[in-house]
Each structure stands twice: as structure tokens, then as C-alpha cells.
Image (spheres, rainbow, N blue to C red):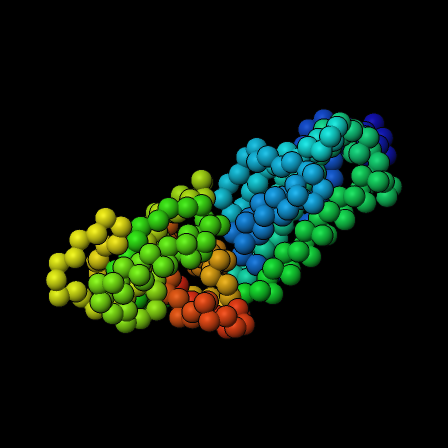
Length: 305
């Protein structure tokens, strides 16, 4: 057998294997990739918030089929007769840059899209490029509303506090704090207990899979001279925490963006963190003002060895 025939056979075999993989094994019809200056968790949350917005805007219904916190989401989108799968792979490039790859599959026209999308500017291809471009633009606008600075390793201060225990989904923590602010401050005023510092938020349990948190909304106070017992407001000392610190500037509602940045930083630097967070709010949102001036100190403790 001549060399040319061997080359032809090898190329034919390679092409056949490629077509079998592309048409029968490859799970998506079309993929779009981009990079963004954000932590993986911020992108992860952004995808879910964007999906909810799409439901209100375009009557698209998104259901999560599979997810792996911070780096993978697979969704099914339905709109009338249309049924699509979106597979988001989220990869941290460095401490501030994340690569996103979106695999898209039209369950009703998959073969047609696979055969045409690489060569033609089809309606399917145009629609998906526009949709993902709009998502990226929305995410970029969101990133303008806050700043995160990684401060490195450090410790918190021991602080005596009055607190209320609350539970919510991650996205609702600020709303729960605001809803209960009058309860705890009113109790302290009625009992003539002086608040001596800015409030803390202590995450005592963070379920990453369910995206729920169990947390204490705390105010530094003077120790009461009398034993005060209440079913809702409790007292304790926040212990010294040794961990990874960051400073967050922005609305307290999205301070978890700093958590995600700390987790990405820890992963890149081979540090292990607990699923607990201590936030110290140094600004009063009730005074209004520019949100990018609202400062929060955040520390996540190192995991026990």
C-alpha cells in the first residue's frame, strides 16, 4: 500500500470518527465562550437571576437539571413548543477572571443545527448569540455596582453582641435583616442597652447545594447589668476568627460576591475555608448615599485541619 493511500485511509477514518462524535455523541448543537472579570460564584448566581428575569421578560421557563456549585449548571428552557438545554461550564482563570462556556442544544432540531450552525448564520445561531450577549452585558452592568478587594489572611476581633437568629435563601439575607432590624434595635432601646458599634452578620451554616443560610444578625452592645431573657433576642460573644479577609464596597444585598471571590482566591492558593462567614457592616444603608461607598469587612475562617 502506497503512502498516499495510507494517508487517505487515515484521513477518512479520522473524518468518520469525528462525524460520529459530532452527530451522535456531542451533547450540544452550538457553544459560545467568553471571559468576564468576576468570581465563579458571581457568574453562577448571575445565571440563575438572569433565568428568572427571562421568565418575566420573554415567558421562558428555566428548570435546573443539574448543578455543581460555582462551576456548572445545566438548565432546561421551555417556551411553547421550544425546548432547549443550556449547559454552563464556569472556570476560574485567576483571582479576578472567569471563563464561561455555554453549550446549547435544541431538543427539537438538534441535527439540523449541528449541520448548519458551523457554516451558516442561521436563525437559531443568531438568537443564541444575541441571548448570551445580552446575558454578558447584564452581568457586566451588575459588576459596576460593587467592588471587592482581597486583603489576605487576618483575624477578627472578639465582640459582645445581641443577636437574632434567621434563616433564608442566600439571595434574601439583606431583606431578612431589614425586616428584623426594628425588632432587635427596639428591644435594645426598651431595655436601655447601648449599641456601641456597627452590626455584624454571622453565617453559622451555609448549604451550598440548597443555597440556604442560617445566620445571626448581631449588634455590638454593652453587657447588660441584669439578666435579660428573651425568646428572640439573645446575647453572646463573637469569638476571634482567623481566616481570609476581603473588603466589599456595594449594596449589602450582594455582599456574597465577596464570599465567592474569597473562595476562588483560596482555591488558587491551596487554602481550605469553612462554609461560614463573618461580615462587619461599616456603613448605614438607612442613611442612603452612593452604594459604592458602603463598606463591609468580611472574613471566612480557615477550615480546621
